[in-house]
Image 1: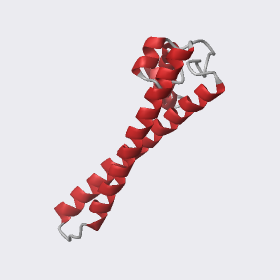
Image 2 (image 1 turned 90 degrees about the vertical axis):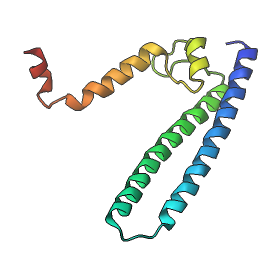
Image 3 (image 1 turned 180 degrees about the vertical axis):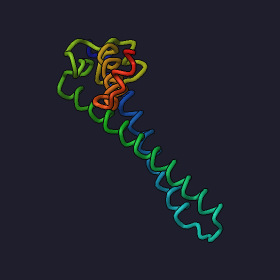
Amino acid sequence: MDARKTKDFLRRLLNEREKVIKSIERTRSAESEIGAQKTEDEGDLATISQEKDILLCLHESVFTRLRFIQQGLTAIERGDYGECSRCGEDISTKRLEAVPWARTCISCQEATEEERVFSPLSGTGMEAADKE
């Protein structure tokens, strides 16, 4: 990848990291507000519990994205940004424009997602049922 494109992706990753950090700060603030709510009403308690669960899922997702962004920044520093971590081939510029923190080419990403979908079924007998 040429230096101009790498610099552009560096800028995009840094901007995205700032957005993610602000999102984490907003989530923490919302968690504090929810935690401060006092009620004995069962409906309110259920709503508060649901809101906490939603925030936890958002928080985990945002931290995962932050980790991927940081890995992208590290790859730029190492000089191997845009290289698939699974097969070693170049990740298409089109994919990196869509997802600058992408660590795998589209083929390897699809294979990884397929493995995740089918791996929980391994050993459960579901494979045999599918063949019938």
